[in-house]
Length: 443
Ligand SMILES: [Zn+2]
Ligand SMILES: [Zn+2]
Image 1 (cartoon, rainbow, N blue to C red):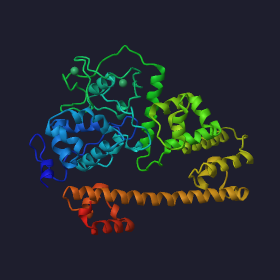
Image 2 (image 1 turned 45 degrees about the horizontal axis):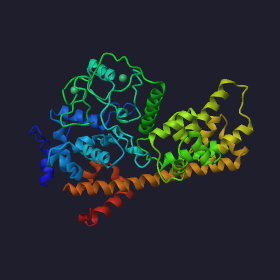
Image 3 (image 1 turned 180 degrees about the vertical axis):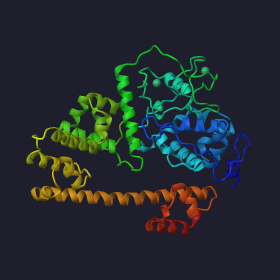
Image 4 (image 1 turned 90 degrees about the horizontal axis):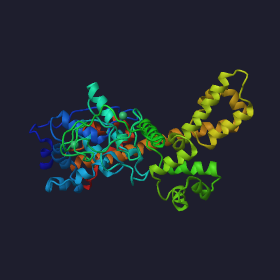
C-alpha cells in the first residue's frame, strides 16, 4: 500500500486524489492516421500538470507497475528506461503496461490507439520503431503558429516513415542547434523542444526534398495506422498478416511459394516461414510486396475490404449504365466469391450491392444464398463468443491488477476500468463472481 500512496504523491508535491490521479486529457487525433503517440501524450500530460516527465515515470507510473525494467531509473538515475522509451509506442509489454497504468490514472479507455499494440504478435518488432525521436520541423512550426498543443503523431515513431506527407520533406532526427539526437521520452521532455538545449524544433522551411519511394512508404504507413484505428473495438484475427500473404500467394502465384519469394526478392526460406505461419513478417518486407504489386497495404491486409470494394464498384458500374445489367453468370460468380472468401455480409446487403432483390436471388441461387445466410449467422455467433472470451480475459487482468494495487476489485472499481455496466450482462457477472470468490491471493 505504501507504494500506491507514494504513487499519488507526484513530483511537484501536489497530492493527486485517488479517483482522478491525472488529467483526463484526450489524445490528439485519436481517430485517424495522425493519432498522437503515447510518448507524446505522456510528455503533454506532464506539461499540463506542470511537472517533469521524469516525475510522472518515477513517482506515478513506476510504483504502480513495479516492474524490473523501470527499477534502474529510480535506483541509479540511469537513462536505461528513456533509452528504450520508443517501446512505449510499440507492440510489446512496455506499451501494454504503460497503457494500462496511464489509462487507470487518467480514466481514459482509448490510449492503446496511441501505440501499435493492435499489431502485437502480427508483425516483427525488429526495426519497427526508430530508436531516437524524429519529427517534421515544418509540422511542429505549424502547430506552434496555430497555438495548439504541440504533439507528435505515432507514425513518426515508425522507422519506415521517413517523409512527411504534408510537406514532402524528410523527417529530422537531431536538433539544429546542438546537433544531438534525443530519445522519445526524456526526464525533461517537452514536445516541440530539444530535450538537451531547449531549442524550438520547428522550422520555417527546409530545402531538402524527399524521394518518391519514401513518400509512397509514408503514405502506406498512414493507411496502415488509419486501418488499425478503424478496428478499435475488434481484435484482429491471429496472424492475419500471414494469412493475407498466404491468400495473395495462393491467388497470384498458384500456391507456389518459391515463385512468389523470387518475384518479391525475398529469401525463399523466410517467405515460406511467413506462409506457414512460423514467423511474422516485418514492415519493410510488406512495403516491398505492396510496391511490387502496386497496391496499397490495406488491400493486401484486408481481403474483406477489397472484396467489398469490388462489389461496390460493380454496383456503381451498373448504376452508371442502366443498360449494363449484371447478368446471371456475374451474379453467380459474385455470390460464389462471397462464400469462398467467407465475407460476413448479410444476404440483404449482398442483394443491395448487386442491385437484385433478395427473393429473386434466393429463387435463382438457393444453395449459394443459403450458404451466405449461414456464414453470416456463424460470424455473428463467433463474434459474440469472442467478445465474451475477451471480456473474461480482461476481467482476469483487471482484477489481478487491482488486487496487486491493494484495491478491492468491487464491481464499481472493475467497471471504472473496463467500462460502465459491463458487468450487467449475466454471463460476465457470473464469471466475475466466480473470479472474486476464488482465493484472491492467487493473482
Ligand atoms: Zn510536415
Ligand atoms: Zn538541442
